[in-house]
Image (tube, rainbow, N blue to C red; front, side):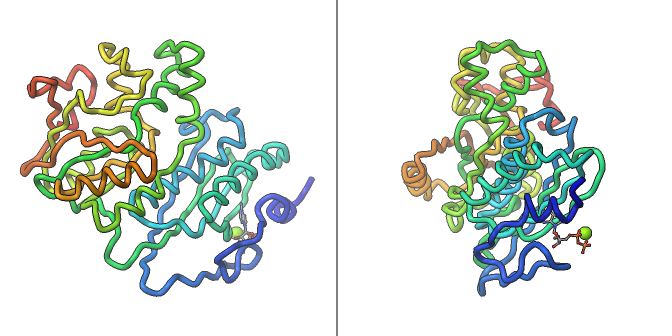
Length: 318
Ligand code: ADP
Ligand code: MG
């Protein structure tokens, strides 16, 4: 049996790029860039709740870091350092090898240093803490939305929820749709470059981890504003568009989690700049509605009539 220290050395010790002291001492040492603020966030993935225990460890390694990178994106921060705390039921080296490969691949893509963590025996649980940097005073907060801001979302919504609904047999997808939607669930792409580009342009931002309506509602509450969202404007995934008459499909679009797209608000005067960012990043950015004064979230149909959301199971967001 390899010791905990062997496992850490073998699988979780890699050269760092911008860290004074990384894995191996009692604490890591960092030197934050002068003039920057630190953005710090933690996301835990629990087997049986956030993923299936038998899921591909490589994809879990990717996702455990991707969901944390997404939080940095939502703040407009540049991700820099992560710690990794693992509870493992046993020292399964095939699993650890796959997990570490997936984890370090995405860490490298975003130039993030793994600087420490904790490894213990217990029910499978993956906990990442991430630290990023953002110019002082410039972070994208949930609380900055203003009346007359446009509301935007990146990418397409619903693929991850659709894949999950299929795996849970709540929806039946054709094989090519399953193949196209599963990556959104298993290997989400955090919108880090978008978050960085929105600093100084967006008034507020959040990443969509719990579904568009739930996450937009967090912006509304934090900012003390209301919103009108145009249902026909929502960038539904191509696999959802054809099924939007189905309640389950609408739920994937409006309340499906795990998309890890960004929802943000910006004044209409910045519309062209947002569109330029979209072209530069080759990432669709769609204006889906407006911030209003008041409270609550109104969903409007093509005729501008308020849609009933109760039957779709999210009237508590109104
Ligand atoms: P301590 O006894 O001081 O708590 P540990 O034995 O828990 O130290 O960890 C030894 C070193 O390995 C520390 O630098 C810690 O940050 C690092 N470490 C432990 N687990 C992990 C992990 N899963 N990934 C990266 N670094 C880890
Ligand atoms: Mg320890």
